[in-house]
Image 1 (cartoon, helix red, strand yellow):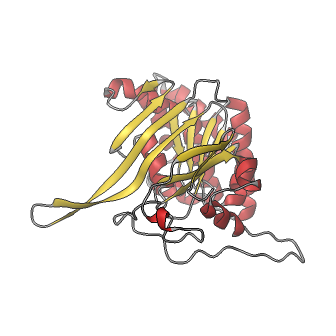
Image 2: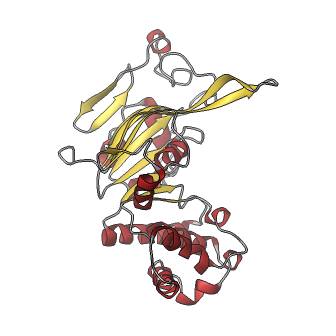
Image 3: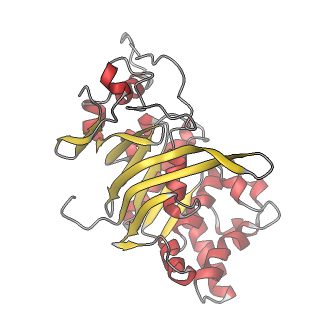
Length: 323
């Protein structure tokens, strides 16, 4: 993989949200939602991004897509830095990068028929006639497991799983290369989850899609992803292949996350690793290693020095003083 040109490359990405106060609304502090994230995403792979709620994984995905303006760093798509491009040039890249949201109902206009909502992408990015747009949308609905007749229905007439299929149809409408799945199955029942995951895998094979799969469900991530990035408090703590992360986790935070995965095996006793304390505030960032306030292995130097991001075996990276 490392020998190929990455589809997406992120370098030293930071995303801060200012905290303002007073009459003049001066910035008194920053919420460091994403801090110095650098990675490459290769064509055709599925990169999982995991961590607790508040670890910055969704903000990272939204920033990559341009829904949030980055504070610092660069985003390269097919080798070109897309930050700072004109709206005209950026339009082509946005067509090639799409997102599936956790709650598709919130992103649909309740007063607009589904067919009209899905047609909007074609109106903005293509010159298709009304008749051709309607034909393409009806084909998309069938492709994601719905009925062509659903074109005339409203969002409230669909179940949660069906609405997520509509979200998937919207994401694949313009034949993108990269789709960011932001907790795309976390709000669904387990049986529905399985069907949506199968659909995502089928579409990936058919259209040679690349996924960034953001989730807190480590079981789903193992099934879906080739590589996994573990984030904590906006930083990267471990990155490796799915096998490396699940069979040989090196960072104490990764081990704690994996120990909490439900394993319904009769007679097997579980020993989840309990992390003391809550996730620190991203507006009051810890010194040294961001995980040292909860880490069972923490030493004095962990409080003072930020751990180096290093490769411990081929393709397996970790940021920890004690590994």
